[in-house]
Image 1 (cartoon, rainbow, N blue to C red):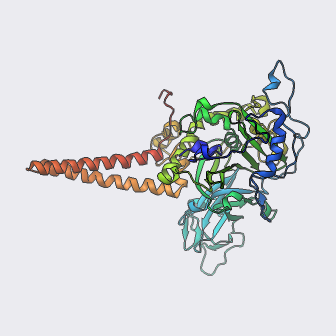
Image 2 (image 1 turned 90 degrees about the vertical axis):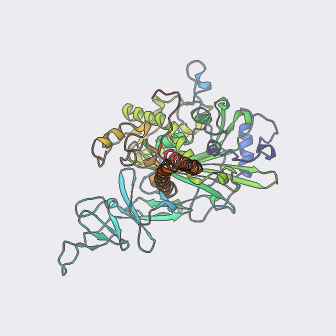
Image 3 (image 1 turned 180 degrees about the horizontal axis):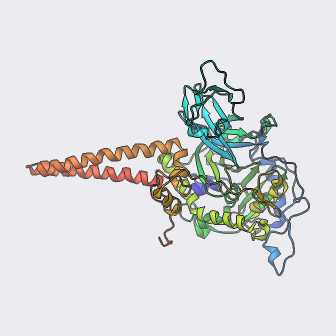
Length: 554
């Protein structure tokens, strides 16, 4: 799958020679500082036109924006000010009214929610449990039994009710306790034996949760993605749990400059020789995010539209005109959820009104593993970045060297954090920080030597990778969250065992056979079984083994 090309919002599997790209209105092939403003102003009126839902936040690729000021330019020592992004302007330093709980957060892909078990999830440090009742309705509670604080996500579903497996208390959809086995038959269940509930909504294949317990859910803030509602639009969706902060994850996803280097030859669209200056035009800055155009200098156009919306929604869109003169829409959508200090969960959705031929050739589980490989290629860099931010506890302007030709979105994001970070549990902004008040909670449920060794060897997945939870390992980062990949691993593991037994039996019969023809037939059959074993083992290994760069010493 040409994954890196889709990450950049480029054409996937479409002949570029037959496309009419959106170039600058003066018809010239190069973008210059003098015509960037003119180009974006004319393009904004023409490109990515979509309609707004009456009751949902704008999350598509169009903006009515009047032109916004470009990033600040300050005179540094020597010529640094020509290539380095300068300090924040007065506008950037404005503090906005913000409360992180009064937002919708992406919990899970609808298609991957288990039908027969509760699911434990977190938003920042708030632990939640999500499940389907007997009628298929979704419910979300605080992941805490009111009796002894046991995790309800470790429980089970009994007749559509959520049961705590510690003492057997059962709860219905509204959070009311309906069964306490330890009470006499004539005793009433205490009213206080109830759960704290959270509002959840399903929209466009994603389940969202409203985190506030005091402010009613705001339907206008529920994201709606215009391209995903277009006729013929299809997407490939995956979910990944990652061992670094959600702000670092978002930073990575809005950084197209790293793709040719970090993901070199991951597929045919990412090549390190394509690393080059990028062109940016910021067209919108609000208390809820920012948006603008970007493109490669060599292409002479800024045809990609990036939008970030609070609290953690990022999308990259592009329109193209195919060889038949029809307009096609492409989107890379990233829904990031903070899951605690140094942890995050990401829903990735790549799609378009014209699909890449690669998506028709390869099975979905194979494409999912390609996505896992991309995150593994960046994991070491981002984990170390997370460690430095937590250790240094200073704003990113003291640590980063942001370049005008590659890091505009990163600088915009950290400056947005300056505006709203005061309303978050913690944040690392461009000029401000609020460090976590409490140390990260580390759960030690896995016990024993195998679990310990597994947790200490994330690069290779560790020992006992199928049993010891470890976010450095592909199986626990993706497979357990994906019904398709989980079923694939189980199926191929089962199929691997069957030809193993058949190969042993055929080999034994070949030894006992007296006829040369029978011996040859049985040995060929045994060889074919061994081939099947190898194929099944390869599929399982691909789904559970991390990518390791070949230049590293192991």
